[in-house]
Image (cartoon, rainbow, N blue to C red):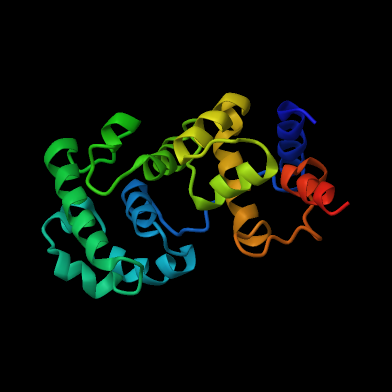
Length: 215
């Protein structure tokens, strides 16, 4: 099976059964999106959603968060992973938003990457959700699923992103990110992939390799 056939099969399946995937993070605007995505690094969306209502009520804008201290934010985000470093990044990010971008979330990869605590994955999520741009954020789920399915052989998130971007039409790229992420979260799990019930086995390189080795 060619890589093109794998992409056509996988994307075709998702487009039919899940035409409008959405983020499981909760947010209402660009600033909240950026904050929620930063908090979600190495943390579950459910855990982030449990702390953001109170956080956003206390600090609804970049201006409000920019005058807070990391200790102030820790009262709200202590339940997420790496709360100390995230509190530092959120305050520094908010201050740069106010000082350089007038409190507005930038709309390009280059400018987003100038914000403290914002890496390429976070920037891609913001570009896709807030600005509707072609973007394929590669987190651990997207990285794992893409390699298992045979959509990429990249050994870094950036390499996987390049492979996916090359084969997926721009208007489908952010949807594809959600499809692969959710598939990795609920079916193609890291330790116990649910291959016996997975609907993608027809196109899956991992399953094909396992079948050959068992013969």
